[in-house]
Length: 143
Length: 219
Image (cartoon, rainbow over all chains, first blue to last red; front, side):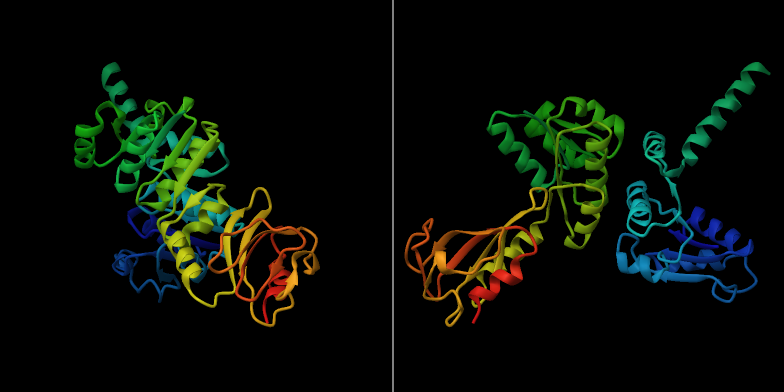
């Protein structure tokens, strides 16, 4: 399975590494060449030697997406730090390139919910975090 | 008419001013605090502080009763998403988006965010219009109506040069709507209007007919 990860931040890099370890073909796209270091960190070999692909480019540029392999991708992960960038490129991957599985990181819970209703697979870490805080407070109150 | 303008830069501020001057009800949304405070001194309650891509900010601005949402921030992703949400979630009748980088126009189109206005493209079109010896200038595109209006210059020796409007072999779905002769006022022609080399001819047509039409006006 070919996984394209857009955004090599904490989330994107970790998901890219675990996908590669799981035996998938993994390509990473990020505008910052230095983000590559995150892919190498803690690994015995470099990202490329481990079999990964890395492309420097802006996610909303069609050429960059194509260079990173969007046309071959089975799974597209939008994990940049910007909600709006993620929601846009995810829809480009889905509607323009017909990628079968598109997963989007959205920090804003309200928009995560609404875009999920529209058929995007959104993941909202903020919502999970809020629920954990609420649970922790409830646990303290009942203890 | 109630208009929400998102983005209080030069475009947004001047748009808000003009609309207010025309007696329209306007809310301007600005997400950068210092810009907001500066805008508030002039526009007072008309301007609201917040990230216009967040739903609660749009709802507080009254998006449910807005007749028109205009997204003119300096960020194309933001403008696309604001308009997409306005149109698809809040069923706002009319949207207008600013496209900062013409390379992103394809994204606006893909997600149905139309019309998208690109200052760069507008200026480029004007430059093309001014370049001498041009073949064809696209004056107006109405993709929804499947119509466009083009301007062509009549070359010396072209099939149409020296003939009358009724004698020109134009394909079905096209019509000459004006003939502009150098130094004269433009006119709405009839079948007897002569067409001379150097004239500029305005034609309304179905998209895709350009090659057949320009063949008549080129040498």
